[in-house]
Figure 1: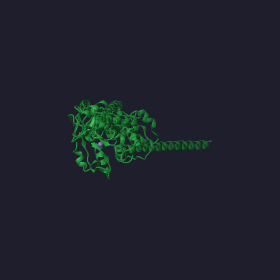
Figure 2: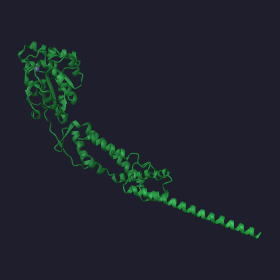
Figure 3: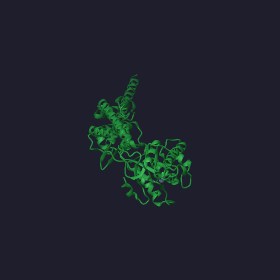
Figure 4: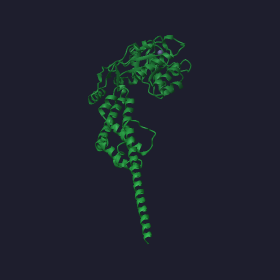
Length: 426
Ligand SMILES: [Zn+2]
């Protein structure tokens, strides 16, 4: 009996002590494992604070720290005044300014809502220690001030939206001002005021000057052809014409129809392009270049001379008239020097050409160019009955506020001119 009790006691002791041992061992293991997790959490955090971001890592701990660091970094950068000073350097480059603002808006959109502590804790996995994470969070100013931060960011986004609207205004009105030698010039009262408002609001270093009304040049071309079949000086070479149009397009010129000449005042650099006689090469060579640079031009057609070989065809003319880049006008029926004709003949030339061209193009024909620049009082009287404007060949520019309505001045462009001569014509 005694033996049995002893055996039982021994077994009990062995069982209990091994139980204690196992429990102790397991607890040890658990602590070690926990320490590992804590270590892992800290390591990852240090990893990120040291800027050794592994962008390929996809585990949740990495993603959490990524978000914290990114948001905290953004937090440091949120300063609207700095953004304006670093971004608004050249108002003329308005498309790229708008892109930069939109990029900035996207940077700050939607980021805050996901970053509340509750939401972050929901996403952690077993490899992250909650307490450690909590400590890190509590040390992070950005997280502590999350509500303040929200307000700050909303304000920032609102400022960006307003700024974008302001830049859009300058983009939409870019033809009304120019930027040269670091000075913004405009003739337009509203644009002038908006530029000044903008400058003062953001305390920018902009030079803004009100520009006096400038006179508008009306350029007079005939042909655009490399191998002329007629008077050589009147045929500008194709390459030369192309570089002239490129120059106008790239230097802020606004091309107008003659019928729009009274509005020339609104634009910083208005110019009118005219082509007399209606040569075929204006359709084949000049028109594609005008389309390429989206420039408007005016062509004056001898209504009796449309034939499709040296002069353009009716179809050529209709296509151009419908293109929205070309305004068609009359150059009489038979290209006679009008001042040498009888009153009846003048009337015929002026009236019949208009009728014919109106029917053909289905557009109003309100402008005439006097053939060879010939006119007198009788010619003007007759022209006034049918047309709103008439073009002479008198050299010079026109003042939109004081137009020579029935003897508009022009500037010839000759074949011998190089680009430099061209630039100095107006
Ligand atoms: Zn002519």
